[in-house]
Every structure is written in structure tokens, then in C-alpha cells.
Length: 420
Image 1 (spheres, rainbow, N blue to C red):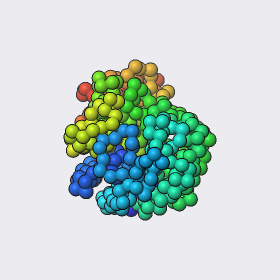
Image 2: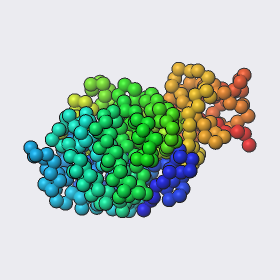
Image 3: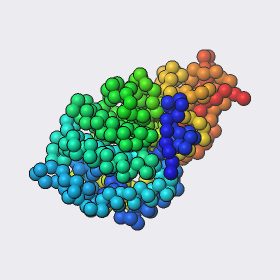
Image 4: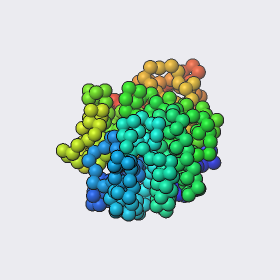
């Protein structure tokens, strides 16, 4: 099994002692919905594509889900009963992770989706699912003991605003249980796009990796950099992963649009170059909830009808996400930090960063760019729409270098290194 740790630079991750990019496919409903054959087929697909991690919610996301086959609990007027659900839920979840581990995947397990925590927006939607403090400790302890053999990354929160003291106390209690039961496991938290983790937690001992959600709505294209800047500005340096950029195929703006692969690619690369370069989550609308054709979906008015999981699994944005991992690892771009002063002002939303002696620029639109760098450099260009290298033309200018307009109609990545 793969063991993930924080690298000495505190900006990247090590897998069995070697720097690696954590690339996670979002399958929140893996424990509740796929048949055994479906799960094995999906693992083989994502393994071949280059994914090495899986985002899974241990408990069902009760307000935002497709129809599911299994549940670990029953709900009554008295609350959640963990002895009243599917008796095979936990043993089946172990089987799910055994198959994933055998194919080289690390699970990133969300322990407490916000529905189960007091003081959260999700708890107000499903108040009968809120756990007591005693239930929380018992459940988290059981989950960690059950899944620790798979060397997971534990995500404490799920889709939370991180702005309620009661909720933060409950999440912190859960994180303390994880530290007690699995002291070597990495801990992250999963939040909403509007959340800003308080410094008291972000700089404390109950988190190892910042897991951001830049999300799916109006600011989907700018939040990857904005959130990364916030967490880079905190007192303790930590690796940053955008666990949830916009999902491919997800509906937005009251049904007027859907996110396509170029949106996902822009959100992904913007975050990476801005400094969220330790890893990335990818989601396809229909895979994350394991949606079946004709099934009910509780958040259709928000996200639009999901595509059948077998269709969504074939969306080409997964290949773009895998290409992010490939380029970061092959070009050794771990530990990128944004440096906006590198770019002469331009309106297209380009992002520039540094790592070592390299300058990296993500250009979402095919325009010329001017960089404040020494002209004696080599420039590698990637046509990201096609996942390949392309030719590049440069012109020395006063105070820097002009990268001329590319001859392809898509986004580009430029890697600038000293000549020789």
C-alpha cells in the first residue's frame, strides 16, 4: 500500500518517500451505490487513465444524492441508528477499498459530511441526521479503526462553511480521534467555496493538508487562485490540493449552462500554478453520485440531472486531469508558488508562478504574453486542449520576454527555464 506524507518543503506530498501528485477521482457514493462489477470496471478505467486516489464519503450525502442501494444507518424520530442499517455496509466498504488498494489507489475518506454535524447548513436541511457528541466519537473511532489498514487520507469535514463554533468544535473533536487512532495518517478538511478555515485550526495540529473547494458557480474560474492565496498567507505552510474544482457536466446558473472540460481544465491549472500543486480532485457529474438512468436525484433543481455514471465516466476531462499529474511530475513542478509580478498586466486571466529556477504560466486564452524574466531562457509550451507539446515563439522585449500568440485555439501552459 502507498503511504502519503508531507514533504520537507511543506508544499508537496511524498508517496512512499517520493514526491508524487495526488490525483483523486470523486466517487462520493462508492460505499453505497456501485455493484461489484461496476466498481471493478471503474477502477480499471481510472487506473489506466492515471488516477492514484479516490474521494469517498464514508456516510451518504443525504441532501445531495442519487438513489442508493446501501446505508450504514436507519433514521427514526429518535435520530440516527447505526445498528439499523445494512448489516453488510462496513464489510462491503472494506471490500471496496481492498479492490481499490490492489490497483494502486489511496482513499481520501470524508468522515463527517456536514449533514451529521450540529450548526451546519446541511444539518438544517436534515436535522434528523445530526449525531450527538457520543455518537460522533463512537462512529469516527469505528471508521478509523476499520479503514486505517488502507493508509487513507482522512478528510474531517464535508462541504462545510467552517464558520460555526459548534460545528468547528465537533469537527475538531473528530480530528482528535483520528490523531489518537491513526497518528501517522494525513488529515485534511473539505469545505465550501465561501469557507475560509480559521487560522486557529489551519495553523494548528489537526490538519496536514489544505483541501480546497473552488466549486461550480459564479467564481469557479477565479476562486482556485483566490483560495490558494488565502491559505498560502496563513502562518503555517502546508501542501494545498483543490479537492473540488468544478465538476465536468454539472449544471449551474439555474440550468442555463453546464461545466465542460475546458472549464475544469482552467480551474485545475489555475489552482496548480497559483500554489495548489500537491494534488487535484476531478469530478464527473453522474460518477460522484453514481447515477443510474432514470433514477431520482435530490439536487436536480440545483445541479441539473446527472448523466448516467457509465456515460459520465467517459468524459474527456478525466484525461485532462491525468495530464495535469503527468506534467507536474515529469516537469518537477511540485511546490509552485504564485508570483503575479512575473506577468505584465493583461486581461485574459493568466496565472504565473515559480518553483526553483523555473517560471510556470497558465494561459487560459490564446493571446501573447509578456513576462518579466531574463530573455536567455528556454520555453516549453503545452497545448492543453490536446494534451501535447507544441512549438513556441518568443521575442526579447525591454525588461523581459514576449511569448507570442500560439497557433492553436485553446489554453496553454508555458514552462520557462534558464538556458543551458
